[in-house]
Image (cartoon, rainbow, N blue to C red; front, top):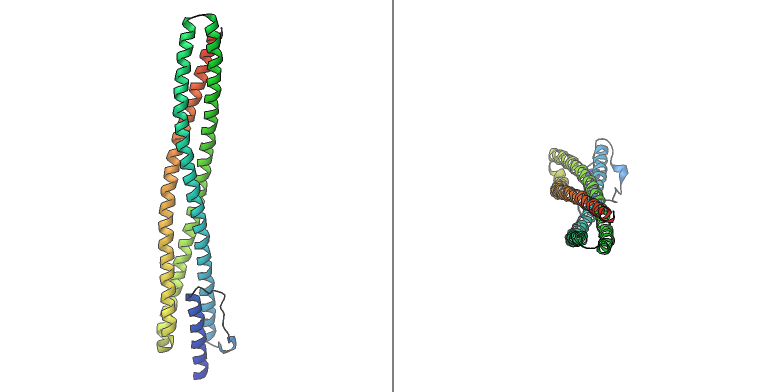
Length: 247
C-alpha cells in the first residue's frame, strides 16, 4: 500500500511540475495505481490540466486579437488625422471658389460661365472628400464593433481564470488534508492559482484599454459624421450658387 502511494505521489507530482512548466499534453504513466479514493485525484489533475490549457489558449488568442485591434485603431487614427488635413484644405478651396463666384456675378456673362464651371469643379472635389469621410466613419464603426467583441472575449478569460483559481484553491485544501503527502501538490496548486490571478489581472487591464479605445473611437465617429454632414451642406450650397449663376 505504501509503495502504491509513493508511486502516486511521484506520478502526480511529475504531472503537476510539467503543467507548471507549460506542458499541458502530460498524463499519468501509471493509471492502474489510481484506484479507490485516488481515482478522484487523477480525475481532478486531468480536469485542472484541461482548464489551465484552455485558459492559456484563450489568453494567447485574446492577446492576438488585442494586438490586431490596437493596430486597426492606430491606422484609423492616422486616417482621421489625414482626413482632417484634407478637409481643411478643401475648405480653403471652397472659400476661394465662392469668392470667384461673387466676382463673376458682378462682372460679365462670360465670367459667370467660367465661375459656373469652377463651382462645379470644386463641388466635385468636395463631394469626393465627403465620400472619403463616410468611408472613414464606416471603418471606425467596424473598429468599434471589433473592440466590443474583444472586450467580450476578455470577460470570458476573466471567468475562466476565476474558475481555475477556485479549482486550485480546492486542490490546496485537499492537499492540506493529505498532510505530508500532499505538500508537493499544494505547491503546484499555489503556482496554478498565481497563474490564474495573473491572467485575470492581465484580462482586466486589457479590458480597460479596450473600453477606453471604444470611447475614443465613438467620439471620433461622432465628429466625423458631423464633418460629413457639414461638407454635404457646403456641396449643396455651391451647386445652388452655380445653378443660379447659370440662369
